[in-house]
Figure 1 (cartoon, rainbow, N blue to C red):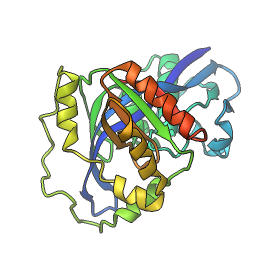
Figure 2 (tube, rainbow, N blue to C red):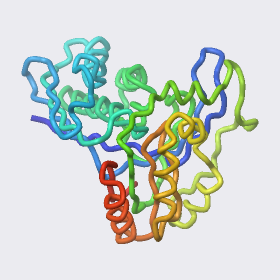
Figure 3 (cartoon, rainbow, N blue to C red):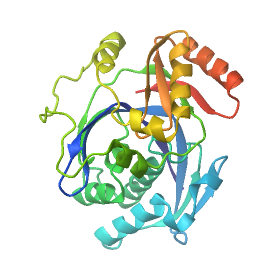
Length: 289
């Protein structure tokens, strides 16, 4: 029995540089990963399949459509005689929440199959399957601080400092496609004039340097997501009002939002206050790295 943690992805920044002529959006995003995670196990040699448990299992939809099975099928097509087995997923992370829960699960499945079959994570077949499984799967395969560009195919690791954080989701899904549609970019159009990849992300820098750097870079999907689901604005306001919050922002296409704190105790106190005020919301106090 092999086990992997599928850590939540958090977009510290998300810039939509434009929309390509093929319809895909060209992105640049600094990504960190949280200490909250789904848990995926693989029983080698068992009949292929997927069993989902956990408090949020019912939100995962049809098992046959799950990204874990999609990634496994694609890798079996790419690697002859791939050893497989049966997966079991303990679902902890909210679904359709902007934190790459399904992508993290698919990436964990690829890591498990790589371990079982002695494949390097740098194997080009594994990288290709990750991208075919979903735009966030390649960075989730790495599962460490990175800057991701393009449609998710270009990833550069970053030394992101450990950050105390609170993550909040109002338990309302926000479809990614709807948010990009609300952004309203036509094919071939640009949202940002600067096309060059940024090279000045902090490396081995203090938290204060990161906060100062991130403060001037918004999540371009925040405004259209709030138009679709106004409660996101309420979540952000609750985080920004929290004592000790240094930066609050939406992750991905929403609805999960996060705040970074200077001290773990401040994050825990903020999480307690938000849970008390909004008992129906999903709230996690922990760290990003």
